[in-house]
Image (cartoon, rainbow, N blue to C red; front, side):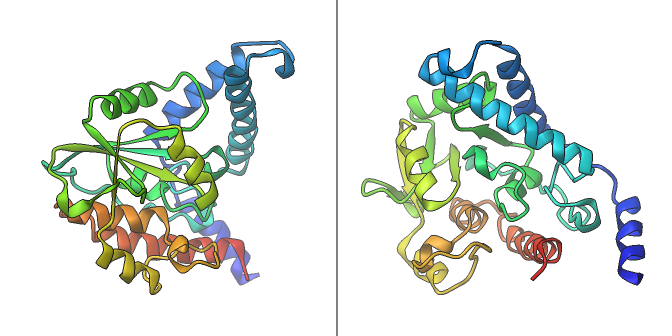
Length: 258
């Protein structure tokens, strides 16, 4: 009984938070859903993918809204962490923008970590892979094609973060390891990676996400990898993201239960 009263009080006290990044994606979702009334099987492959993703995400967003869950931290209102995870200062001179290139299955997951990048930085944009009509995706691809952006991904030709010179846009891929490999193949442009000493540190357990993987370094969450990458580029606020991850992970555990 006491827990139920606490949860109700927390729900009442936690205001609904705004998310400009999610708002922009939702507009693209609605445009894609409204773009056709044909059976999905009759559409060309790229449009079929976009409409299928949009319909799936529209259902998820509707369920999320019915529950009154937080659009900024993607947790139930009783577990909202937005008061503890305030927006941070701008990225500084070395990083212009961050694009979170996300697999659609990650959207609104309580255990997703990339949502905190979007919550922390006004310069962060959300791009859903495969969804058409996103202005942020057009910006991201133009920057990649012009050489003004790098994709954070550990490919064989990736440059270590310590070798990069800013200013630069950073594209962060968000998904499982298998999903990330596929999303990486969709993107043009340069690749960058964490320096070897940071990878060694992360593989020992610091910054792992809540989902397990038999290969230790593949448990490293998007937020932890981004935090170290931004730190290497001189973003002074990057270390604060470690505190944000600890707070959000603890809240997700409470929400999901044992």
